[in-house]
Length: 173
Length: 239
Image 1 (cartoon, one colour):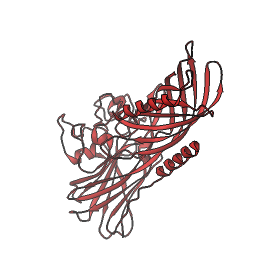
Image 2 (cartoon, each protein chain N blue to C red):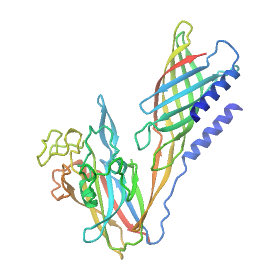
Image 3 (cartoon, rainbow over the protein chains, first blue to last red):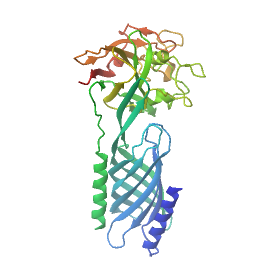
Image 4 (cartoon, each protein chain N blue to C red):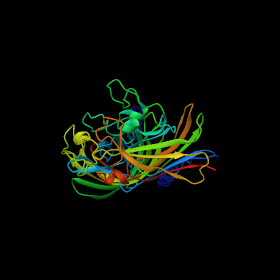
């Protein structure tokens, strides 16, 4: 519910910031084997920079379920374009929230990625995406157990998957 | 201005990622260090020849000097919660059979393995670490000496003596193609109250290859890489 609200809010803000009919703004759905995200890209009118807030669900913690949450922001620049292809690079930052009953370890992360968008359709409104890059994010967490016999403490580490890749679909407004 | 703000945010994020939790030991605490060995990470095939590096399943527990199980200290997630993935329905009774039989709890399916609905409740259940592990133990209604034991196992850790195609019922059968391969290895050591030097647990035996019993086997010659899953397990009383 919260995710949907953020997304709708993002779309609303995006729409209000861009008044022109033909832009590079886009909504995208991206997936890989361990995460699914939905995002909205806003292209600046003045400089060749775009921002892309996103939210998603993922499966990178101990329980092997697609129940983790993540949200973040990509800031990118175009690198090279042809009639159909747009290559770009971006910085990626956000927070990854593993969801399980063993530990809490909301983990900020930072990364860099490169991507390519293949534009489809007569008006280039549709596109296929491929992104890959590196992400760094690690967080320690404490675990404690106590019984009549012993008290046990240990520290574990949660690490966001460093290799990032995603395939996706986008629709440009 | 906008870009600067984003960069500042990114810097903040990366700094937050660097925060480290520390264990704070006090006098009398027991410090257990599991130092990973050469074969701590083992290739586990995923798809089309692609494999990932899997750490082992393991449990560490305490017994009295008469060999009675007292409590688990730490057990890894999959064995403690039936959290197996891609196991083809195998409950992996061959994973840590010695620990399971020492606990002696029989679950509804007749196996001694914790289940999804009845996971381990004594001791810490944790994600299997990819690196060294340090555990702090404070004895309450227990006094030294105690015996500290640990059991480690990789799945699909086949070798010539414990092959994938061993037939069920044979001495080297270890659960079939999704089984263990080499059986679990067991480390043990007795911690005395007046210990002045660290105790290094000794690799004493291996467990039942097919997990059908809680027996130990001292013939270690047929094991290869399983003997170097762990480099050492050091136990010391904090002075």
